[in-house]
Image 1 (cartoon, protein in one colour):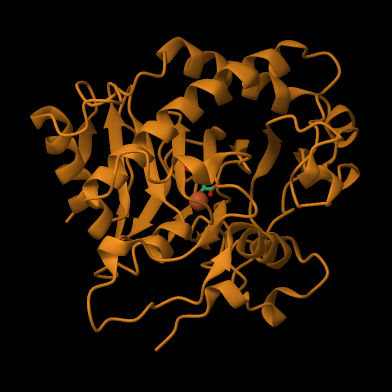
Image 2 (cartoon, rainbow, N blue to C red):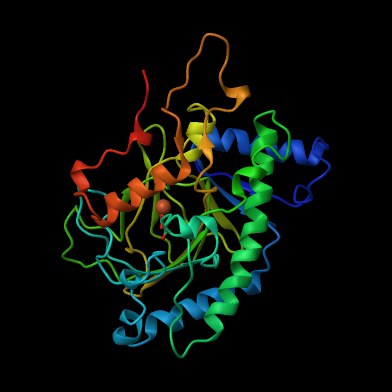
Length: 335
Ligand SMILES: O=C(O)CCC(=O)C(=O)O
Ligand SMILES: [Fe+2]
């Protein structure tokens, strides 16, 4: 079992849900989601020049002086948007802080939006760096294109579960969408076994669409326990399932652990751009009807998206509680 490559041409248009081309893609998705929980997509409809420009601007952003980046530190932002310096996050509580710099942005939610008023984590406005005005406009274009693809992938996922195509559409009314720019310095030669660019973790939302540069370094843990490289494929995106998907599918589809070490770049930094398609903060995540059969019970405690995400942010940023003392209620697996 590896990480399959799925060609989306012929399956991008909604409204012809049961055509043979669409159902062939839905079948491939089902196999991938029951296995690696990761797959590549190509012919995905996101213009390649939009992706290339996002990488150029990411490089320009990280090349800014540290003081310019720190001026928009995410610690200044109630919505957790902005710059995060090296070692700012510890994705694996048993490892060292991650060797990566990052920049968070997302949808602009106005101060009057009820979720901003309620102080929900990550709802609010962006912080953009001085001197790089195109980053804001380009990131909005990128988010819009990725959002459209993610919506379509969730529709195909619904079909793969024998559900109506639009089954999950309503769960993304006011989503927690996050676009993240990442730069990993070269992995130090002296690094010990507890050093990672991104420590072992699962993603937290619905699906992640990852664009990576040509260096590689992302590794995925298969259900067998074997780690495999998610080697870059030109023009393709890596898609993986976040923690909401096993909850919706009662464990049928997997949100698999993965990690990053920038060990193949010949001493160059590695850049990647994950887009986290995370549902509405208040969406209740309970198993879909086609995944709980007579006599079976739900394997996960019901949760809202916001509860789980907030607990995971707290855990990996040491906010409020220490990493080891935080066990999100939503992580509970029922017997
Ligand atoms: O940089 C990568 O390839 C993956 C990053 C990642 O897993 C994450 O940000 O959740
Ligand atoms: Fe991840």
